[in-house]
Length: 60
Image (cartoon, rainbow, N blue to C red; front, side, top):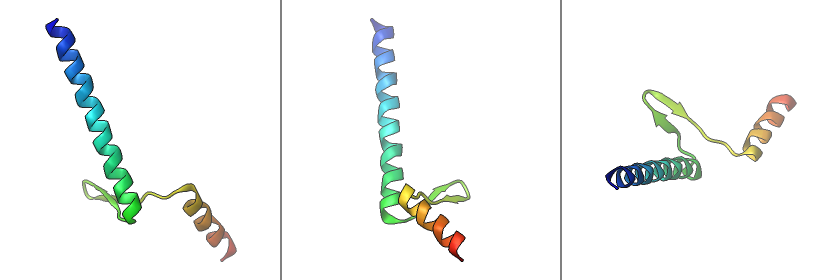
């Protein structure tokens, strides 16, 4: 029984951690802010934004 409870708590912790990461990513994208990991900045784009950027580069 103790192992089952520990396993359930572990799985719940993983699920909560994933949800927090998803929320951080979505919030950064919605605000148009970079996601900072260590010293690196990451910008998230939707498929439409990526397509617009590609078309702009090709048409220059």
